[in-house]
Image (cartoon, rainbow, N blue to C red; front, side, top):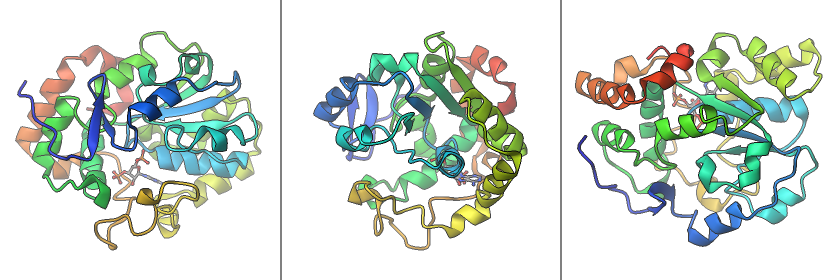
Length: 278
Ligand code: A3P
């Protein structure tokens, strides 16, 4: 496989994992050393797998904040009421060891849709100073050099190394096909009793078009580079298409072949998650 240099400078590498620059060496060390509470809950995923959607529904269902663990300072996270729920994209080995003892929901999405969504994401925020095309992003993805690391390694570490006894795998495809049933499964896993009527209401209010009307791009307490004015183009939106399988219209035959070659190396992972329809 051809290796590519990371063309955008606003990143750095930790253990070979490409990270956004705000996650500097000291920040990662501080995150690794954080005290994890036994009832903390982590919603982990590779970026672009539907984590904002899941976060929004959990916030509405459980009336709590769901901050990104690596973005917010420990002082803020420690001020939250237990059980705390965090979303996170960092690979498991860069998080505190005790995360493995927590309940973890791992969100997974067809990696070809992830790539297309990631291209949109990378060209969305001015801070990334990224203007390469989708071909380059496919190359980066297949070399594990998109931000937050290698897609297959993340899936293997979080889901298939038996590191986390209390794990629920949820796919974007599940959420798209039947969000109500998926969220009932999530609530059962979290041992949270929420009336069906409320679940239906939250699912309805979190539909793509509904969410797109909300100002999700400004997250209180988030560093300013993710806030208002952080976009390269005001007409672009964080929520792009919100559909399953749009890779078919965006990827070239060559892109698709390259991704198949990359994914074939870890084929046994996909046999375990049939939903992804790769
Ligand atoms: P697309 O770029 O394919 O539209 P994350 O939040 O993990 O970064 O994932 C972002 C992806 O989830 C984007 O995919 C985004 O549009 C999609 N998404 C966010 N909210 C959604 C919703 N309510 N319904 C469907 N897809 C949603």
